[in-house]
Image 1 (spheres, one colour):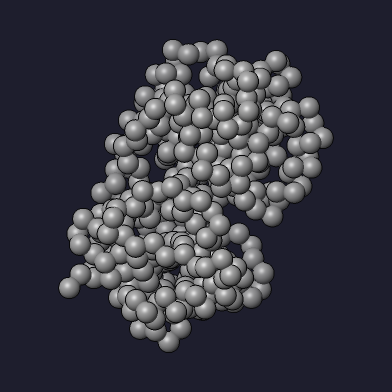
Image 2: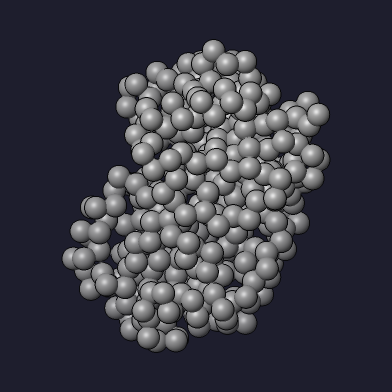
Amino acid sequence: MSQRILFVVKSLFPAGDAYQLHLLTGELALRNWDVHVAVIDQEVPGSLDFPVPVKVHTPGPEQRGRLAKTVWLRRLTKKLQPGIVHSWDFDSAVLSHLAALGIRARRVSTLLEIPPSRELWFRQAGQALLQQTEIVVCHEQIARALKRSYPVTAGKPIRVIPNAIGAQKVDRVAARQRLLQELGIDNPDALIITTVAELSPRTRIKDQVWAAALLECIDYDIHLLIFGVGQQERRLKQYTHQIRVGENVHYLNQSELIEAAMVGSQAYWHSHLTRPLPSELMLAMANRLPTVSVLGEGTDNLVRHQQTAFATNYGARDEFARWTKYIVEQGTATRQLVEQAREHVEHGFPVDLMTGPYLDLYQ
């Protein structure tokens, strides 16, 4: 009889945590595991192509609140009786911990970002969770942050398993045509830039809006596509509407357009250090998108200035505009850079480098 595992993830947004989960489920399916994926947020469209044996579960439309989703997840866990419950982000980890109380199952939690400051009840639930789960992170920086914010992890072993990237199939012409059509952009030569991030002060999306405004001032027909959700969305939109570039900044939440944007844009921007080894930055590189990224701990494994990406200092708004201008004007150098970036992520972070340690962990 095959081993049964239940993964719990916030959403199936293709440029987020679910990308790494997708790679892992593919390997488990090949090994005849009985794989189930519980998706907490049923409203986010998911276009990840899971292997046929993988069963995806979502709550009903009436189960919207945190409590209702916890009850739904508990019923699902009791029904499936998995040997392992593996949550794939901090919010899902807390929910799956509450749902699995009293149920015999091994608990594993993978965290791919530095947890933000949260309300007291969440931190207390997190303390209880972290005492009873095996923790996996993609970078040592997250482990250090956990030990500072959650004292129960100070003496607890935390396994580091780096993120991976698979080979990408790219149809840039079709992807760009879809972007132009869906966004109503008439100019076929418009400069389209994509970013993926939580909409919060710590990801510095405001810096990118400012940089887009600077490029617009020098007569670029620029369109900035922002994918993400968060508590700063309303304030960011207010700021955007106050400046000249406002109508060309598109807040797309977690739209299915992300897959076209990660292929059909002319550049990808990454302005924060909250997600070490970010899947979204690796995807952009694998898709041969020129990337402009802040350089620091967590991105330094990927960003080698003018070799794999154009590096900026943290908070340096003007540098995003400067290096994007370089991308537009220096086509030959940029084409060489994107090929080097693709080779770097595909050879340096292959799928088996991630899936192998997880298989060892499950033994």
